[in-house]
Length: 114
Image (cartoon, rainbow, N blue to C red):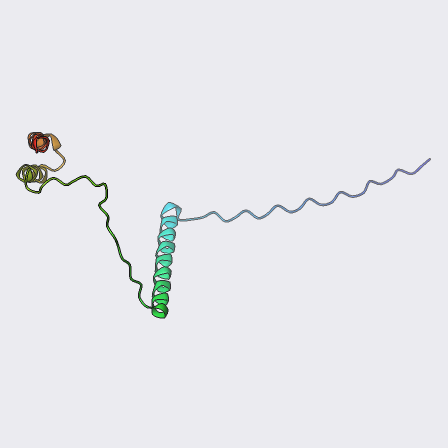
């Protein structure tokens, strides 16, 4: 009789990776880390800009405004008193726009006639 053939030993299963340590501190720690990273990035960019400016000279920018196609502005002062009254009402009644409805209606009527 033939001797039983021994089965080849199975390869050992790879060891499971050690679990990552749980992050402590919660959301506030993450928020503070993000803030620190943002500030470091800002400082780094500022230093880089200064370094470039020191080698190449300060940068100069020129802004050109074009009013092509812009509607003609209404002459200043036509409804200025109504605007001032509305602004004063809004400052004395913060968060209560309904208290100033009369002044808003008066301003709108003025703007429609001028």
